[in-house]
Every structure is written in C-alpha cells, then in structure tokens.
Image (cartoon, rainbow over all chains, first blue to last red; front, top):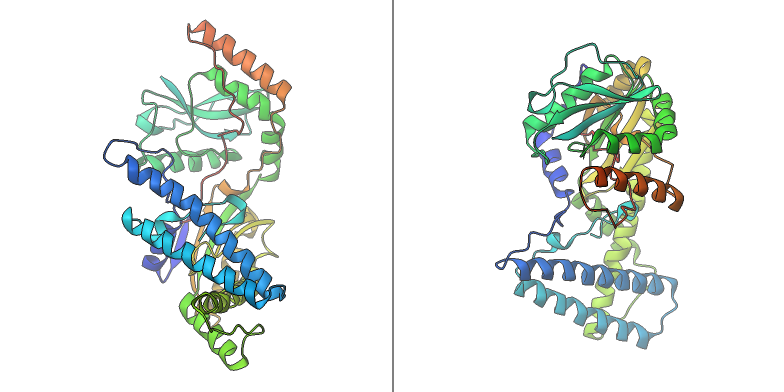
Length: 111
Length: 283
C-alpha cells in the first residue's frame, strides 16, 4: 500500500497521542515496594471520578437555578473540602493529576 | 506452541504466496467453511510490543490485503490450539461474513486535528467576561468563591465543547461525502480536537486525498495529520453476543478439548470476546 503520513507538526501529535494512552496499566504490577502506591492510585482514581461527578451535578443545578443561596454555600464548602483532601492524598502518594485519569469507554476520559 | 492470528480472510484456500510472520514463521490459512484465518505457529506465548513486532504484524496484514479482503486482528491475539480458534470462527462466522462483505474494496484513512486549546479558552473567557455570566454568585464566603470559580470554569468548558462540535462539523464536511463510514473521537485531549477514522472505497482514495489538501489550504489555526490507507481496523463490528446456550456449548467443547490434553476444566466464563476489537490504525 502506498501509505502517506502527512503532517507539519509531527512532534505535537506524538505528544498528544502519548497522553491518551491508558494511565492505568492492564495488569497491576504488585510487589512489596509499589503495592501501596498502586492501590492508592486505583482508589484515588475512583474517588476522583465520584468527586468530578458531584461537581458536575452541582454545576448543572446552579446553571438551572434550582439552588438557594444557602445550598450554594453548603455545596461550595463541601466541594472545597473534598478537593483539598484529594490534594493532600495525592501529595502523600506522590501522584499527579494526569495519573488519575480513567478511560470510560464511550463516555470518554474522566479528565 | 501457540496459534498467532493476523486476520480473517475471505478465502478457504491455501495462501499461495510465502509470507513470513512473527519469529520468521510461515503464515498459513486455517479455514472454516468459505472463510479463513491467517495464522502462524509461534513458540512464544506473549509477543513483546516492539516496533519490529508490531510492524511485522502490520506487514503481514498488508500483504494479505493485496489478495484478500482482510479483517485485521489486534496485535498479539493468540490461541492455544487450532480447535480453540475454530470455535471462535464458528461462533462469529456470520459476523465475519457480514464484515468481509461490508469492507470489501475499502480502506481506512486517519485524520487527526489539533487546535490551540488554551487560546480558544481564552477567547471564550474574554467574550464571557464582557457579557457577564448568566448566573451570578456572590463571592462572600470561601465556599461561594470556590463555587463561583468552578462555575465560570464549567461554563467556559461547556462553550469549549460546543465550539469543538462546530469545528469538527466543518472538518468532517470535507470528508463525509466521500467516505462510506466514519468513527469520530472528539477532544481525546484538550488539544486533540479530532481523531477520526474514515472508511473509503479504494476507487475514492484520490478524492479523499484531494479533500484533505483542500482542507489544509484553508487558513486556520488548526494542525492536521493525515494517514492512510490502512487496513480497516476501526470498522469491524461484531453484533453476535454469546448467549448462555452458546456459552454452554462453547464451554462444553472447550472443556472436552482441555480434558483431551489432560488439563483441568475451565470454570470461569469470559463474558466479553477479547478478539477483533480493532487496534488503532492511526499514526
């Protein structure tokens, strides 16, 4: 086949394609040295998914105007605390945001 | 020894040409009714993902494509025995036939488009800052300030996604009349606006390339990557789902085969076929 690969920005495309590779390995490489971090990554990815969903739902409700001032205050405080806690945990296990991504099939990526 | 598979082909006959596959092993046809699967017998169970191995797999498929219609199989799909492979072919026979008919004389092209996400978001934010956001939140406490910031970000993200849809429609317009099918992935990363695969008739390849040249020459801040023709990795659709009866029969047969080899019976079911899910044919 006379294949053509044509681009004026090869480097940029390579970088983007690398980003969309799975961050969670297909097999968990469990050994005494990394088992804690590996599990933390898995658990925090799921917690992050739930946090994002909560946040998205809250934004939709604010957009729809169905929340009172007090409710907005309460939600804000909760989301703020949740985000700070996640930040703390990520630091403890030395995990970066992009490491907590998750492919959700037809729904796309978590982040 | 394992059976390494390259692709399903629309022929039950022996492959005339000598093709060397992975590990330098010969490629031959395991036939079932009027179709077949091109395979090699290999010693290694898992094939290491190296450039050489992946390219070899691809090369075999492309050689096969000069003679047959091929449903490419994902790299490193292996079976323990020919019987195991035939079981799968028997099960998906109609699906394979339908796909072979649909993909006859067709090839795949990949179009990837990048846009400057940061600049696009800045533009959107500037427009909103002038217009003010539709919902105003008083930032008189840490909680509300947090929500206000999140909300503004949310609105910008939403507009960003809508802009992506509009932009993709413009790009897609160049190709969708020429292509017979397409698979579009939007914003896999912020910058990767579009990652698309188009199924194109072999007789329309030049039209497709011309359409790309036209798109590329239109002034914009988009970056493009065009690739192809590829085997139709992204257009194989398997509709048949294993029913419990099929499972029973398949399990029964597998267990019989396992028993013949003096191996213990398999207890767990694999609920999803691992085969032929397609590998990204893109760059």
